[in-house]
Length: 450
Image (cartoon, one colour):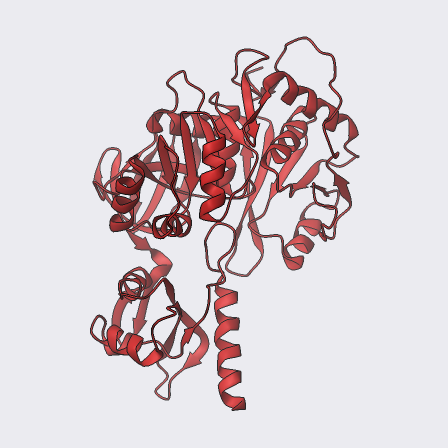
């Protein structure tokens, strides 16, 4: 049977993880995973919501060792948890939070250090065909769509990515992530990249600039910061002195070239942007500060059929539609022109949310802002309406509107334009459309009541 080892680390003393600068060895990691595996209840499906990244990884390893499947939905709202329960009636929740309110049978990660299990140094071998995880995207109907990920598929994806990133150089890189382990990007880059490529996991998930700097400082070099544009923008704007970072990786949202150059200049490092999807996993990268061209992972290819881009080959085991407008410019290179769902047509004029958001965020004084389409809202002529939510403490709505008027066609001016203290971004920096709609509805209800 074809197998791949659970750990790529070559000795029991190799560092698999670190917490506040304290190393956790491969021997202890395997002991912790075996200890947890023995305590798991009956049930083949596990919703792992541990916030400590090391706890999450131990839970994932325990599932692999006992042929359980990790469920990784995009959110943990009560509605989604209910859908998980219907999808996998035997599912239980693994958590390290005693206040966890997930409505599933719960298993709490043991508190304190787990007792060591005496064992010879032997890394479990996992069949490449073993189902390791089921990840979910938000379907158009609101029902999460499942995508099955085998152990072999996950490892091939991450090792190909590590090769492109220069992280298969024989050194152990400390991975510090500002994204949760449950998100596909965080799962691949802060968990699997350690297990499958000999690197080490940072247990913490820092959010604020000072916390990120502290987590980086506590890790040994070489260091890799796995982050998002929203976190990087905050780092650049802060006065925090960042310790040396050998590589920064960004994903989850488009990264502006100007921001990429600012990050590299301020922190004296290289910033690489990752492209992929929940369906395919990571498949390409670019150095955004230098080029708009993306380069695919080894053996992964794109093809266009009826104006739709599809990924195939390498770890992408079946032809998979991409939800982006893609222009192929070489055998393993392409340009990205935005999401297929990003296009907006108002009164016969076309633009894209990417362009509109870029214009909004280019206004001096705007800290963060986003356009969105008002659901079921049209003007008197039946034309769709756009709204915008903006963080701009020093600007008024009238000033913002005038600045936008200079930058975009008047048909795209947002109605309403809402000023807020912060945008309702989730843990990966994304903006759930439902939250934007709620903001707009509350704003209009407030105006109506005046």
